[in-house]
Image (tube, rainbow, N blue to C red):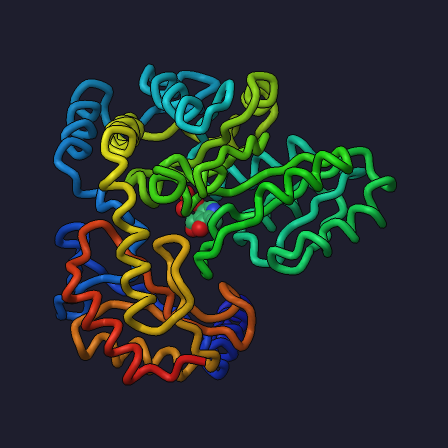
Amino acid sequence: MKSLDQFATGKLDDLQRRHLRRALSDTYREDGIWVERDGRRLLSFSCNDYLNLTQHPTVKQAALEALKVYGAGSGASRLVTGNHPLYAELEARLARIKQTEAAVVFGSGYLANAGIIPVLIGRYGLVLLDELSHACLYAGAQLSRGTVLVFRHNDVAHARELLVRHRSEHDHALLVTDGVFSMDGDLSPLADLLALANEHDAWLMSDDAHGLGVVGGGRGSSFAGNTHIPVPLQMGTLSKAVGAYGGYLCASAAVIELMRNRARTLIYSTGLPPAIVAAAIAALDVIEREPGYAALAVQKAKAFTRAAGLPEAQSPIVPVIIGDEQATLDASDVLMDEGFLGVAIRPPTVPAGTARLRLTFTAQHPDDQIARLARLVREKIPVA
Ligand SMILES: Cc1ncc(COP(=O)(O)O)c(C=O)c1O
């Protein structure tokens, strides 16, 4: 045991020296925007609850009712006895929103990506990822045991170059990208990537964790700009704008049936608690019924970037890049002293030298507070 603890302590000391050690902070979320942390009441610009639906009365009520009817947990894998009847409703709803034949719900977004990619790509396959793809897309790619290549962020020409050079060496190829990039808030050029994938008999997969509910009229990044880009593999999560939990894939009926048969993270993991599935259905109801409300998060982010003199927001996520890790931690403290929560994001979550405050905007953030935050960022934060 001694060498084990020595190993752990050595690793932690190293992280500390590099200003990369992390700590969990108890956070009490009072409502959709206010939190209490370290004894302080703060207006949070660090939650992914873009539509504040975690706190919506009908969403909470739906969860309570499902809890009473079905109990707390699902009791087994979906493939055994954990497939409570709410799943079918949620999956039909997701397929309708994304305009695909079918959908399947996983235990989380991370589990979805770790499960989906190895079903489609094996030892002789190729996974081509945008370099800023989320960590769980990288995890799924590595689990596939295929060849993993990375193209420069949103650089379709570079992706083409790699496909031209390597596609013929592999039986199948998967082109993977975030739809809305989680740490930068920009959108992927999905139309161009889809055309490229089709040219080379590759399959395009987008991770729309940060798109569903807030861009493209609430339908997500493949509907942004009033178009519909028929991305064949549309993955996402129910844990951000939807305010619940769970991951999903929307795709053709054949692909979804294959996932139900082969995705290890679906087969060998317990089904979601029924209350969470009920909450997700109720939240999707709000998103479909109230497109004006769903558009608010991006509108608020745009108001902020205008006032702060930053590049215009394309999603509710606004990166305020500082660069140095310690300077970013200090900037987060400056915000906290003014009553705002803006958590510092450091490597390896973002590339070295690009530590940042990742600010997220929600439908219910008051305009005057957004203006005050913008003034603070303009005057007191050393933006790179
Ligand atoms: C782009 C992206 N994909 C996937 C995930 C994982 O989703 P979940 O939180 O449901 O595991 C996240 C969340 O952190 C994300 O930002």
